[in-house]
Image (cartoon, rainbow over all chains, first blue to last red; front, side, top):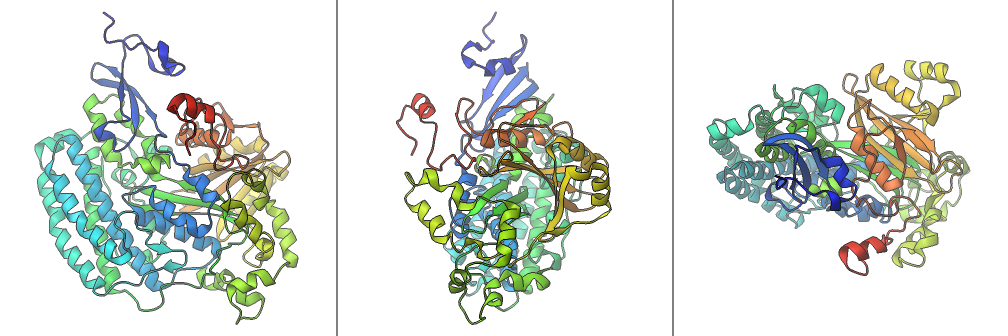
Length: 382
Length: 247
């Protein structure tokens, strides 16, 4: 019978890439709850086994890089928040730093510390969103409520600091626009004490949970060499045993002053990536505590002209965003607008590894692997 | 680095009276001798690239470039690229001669400008012999005013072992192709597809050279400078979305 065949005649050119006689082609997305946005994956199946995948992306393409060329340096900053919208602070920080590098200025120490505190809070929030949704995909519903409940506290701090919860635009080129509010340090420390046992709660729910372990151990394995070849960075790379974190490798801001570790995994599977991210949250807390304790007094803005006009030149600057290496390549022609704004998004590059990770696995593992890659489609498509 | 370079970062006071406000300075110091050199060297067509089309469409946009145009070249007092000399660049120059057009350091970042003919050889050498095992990014920049070399294609490379970055840059004409880097770094697959999608630069030998972010049937390559920000493939929009315009 031909009932399980897909008629590819009306697919146009795409049909040619997809079919072999015994393969079933299944379309997943773009509207699918576990694709974390509008990602479409075309799966080639042999029974339940994955023979190959093809990602179709671009549904959320807004031309961010083109917009960047048509706005001034200052005007473009808020747009960066809309890329990885669950980690807006990190995006904005990377951009501000890149422009600062191009201008050859450096944010004052106090601003750097504030940035570190905010960025690490954001890392925890981003990991919480990841954990909640990833666990939900796999079938554990409780962690979602726990993580979102605790993330709320971070968003409250953001709101008090800069008035926005999600697309924060927290920093400015040259430093920070806002001084910390009264009681900021106390509140952040209180949050650290509050959330530390909560991360333990997530672990209690999952780390030794038999279903969780069965669904994640040995799933979507990626070894270190593959990661490097595929350009995969962030927790995914570290879970494959490569001890590499830009905060340590090429420290930016005040990161060189803090004492923290880089958690790594051994097997490069979904379970290790889960452990790495959980342990990263603890490390972030460690950094935040040190930063709050050592928060220096002083100005929060460097001397930056009102109209930003970097000298002619090019710069590539990248930071360790919650999802991996987030890079900005800026070309200045000496005018108020960048001549070229290139964003190197971690999600886009990491997503490319999906095919390698799910080949030979089962259909249900695709959901787990998409979750473990921690992609945000706003950043994939820009 | 920050300490030594900081004074340059805020050039206004250094050039004129230190009491002046930055904004005022920008206009006052019209032309500096080094301006010609800096502008010529990077051959940036600057705002001139955008206005022709934008006049008709975006009202707010042309205002900004024209307003700043006279003052734009007034800042080359800042850092300038200095020659990058190491064992590696010496060897490369010896081996490839004029194929290595430039080896410089700008703001502490090293870059090579190489002839497109030897590009794949250089990339392979960088990956296998020099240990640049991680291709961070591949991107392009469009300079429509540059004769026969409208595009810069840039490879950002990183070496885990040495913890260093380098950018390999090449210049090609519109319509010319480059050899793919996929056999060297798998990650080049999507990155090259994006460059093709946005700039229309084809990579020969690429396993799947097609658009990635825009729809397959879309016409035009949006990150070219002659593609205005409000421009779109109206035909595609009409057929596929059933509306007159996506704006």
